[in-house]
Image 1 (tube, rainbow, N blue to C red):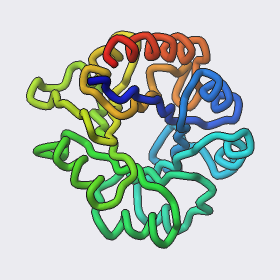
Image 2 (image 1 turned 90 degrees about the vertical axis):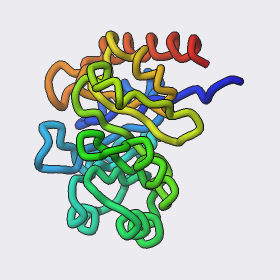
Image 3 (image 1 turned 30 degrees about the vertical axis):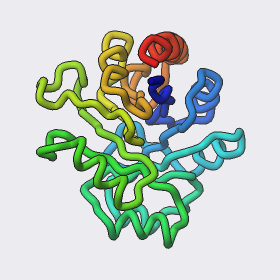
Amino acid sequence: MRRHTPFVKICGITNLEDGIAALEGGARILGVVLSNLSPRKGSQEVIRGLKNVGAEVAGVYTDMDSIRESEMNEDYVQIHFPHGTDEITFVRDHLKKKVISVVKPQHSNDPRAEALELLGLGADYSLIDFGGDLSRVPASHKMDLSGMKTGVAGRISMDNIGYALSLNPYFLDISSRIEEYPGKKDHGKMIELMELFRNESELVS
C-alpha cells in the first residue's frame, strides 16, 4: 500500500526573503516563532508579508497569554507548551485558527499516544519534537506514525532525513540545520535538503 507522501514545514522564518526561498523550495507551511525565548523570534509583520505572497503560516507560541494577546494573522497556531482540550478549543472555536499541537518526548512516557490523543481533541496536526538530533534518540522512542497527521522535528539534516522519513511522518519540521546562524536560513542548504527530501520520499512511498 502506498504511504502518505509527507510535506515539509520550515520553521524559524524571521524575514520575507527566507520565506520566499522556502516556498520556492517546496515547503508547504512556514513557521514563525512568536516567543521572546527564541533566537529565531519573528513577528506579525513577517507573517503579514508571508501571507501576502501566498504562504500558509504557523505562528509558534510558548505560552497561552501570548496566544490571547496576538494579532492572529497566521493560519495555524502551533501550541509549543503542555496543553489539552481547553487550549485547542479556544484556538479552534474562539480564534477560528487551525492547530498544530506539539509533543516533546522527554516530557512524555508515550509520545505517539499523546500525539494521537491531541489529534482526537481537535488538533489539525500534531508534531513530535525530539529536540536534539532525532537519529540519536533511544531505540524505545522509535515509532511508526503511519495513518496519523503527525510530523517530526529534531535537527533534521542531510545526515538524518532518511531516519526521519523511516518513522512515516505526515510532515517534517525543519529549521536549525538549514541556517547560516539562528534566524537566518542558508538558501543553498535549504534547497539541497529539499531536493534530498523529495528523493528520499519517493523511495519510502
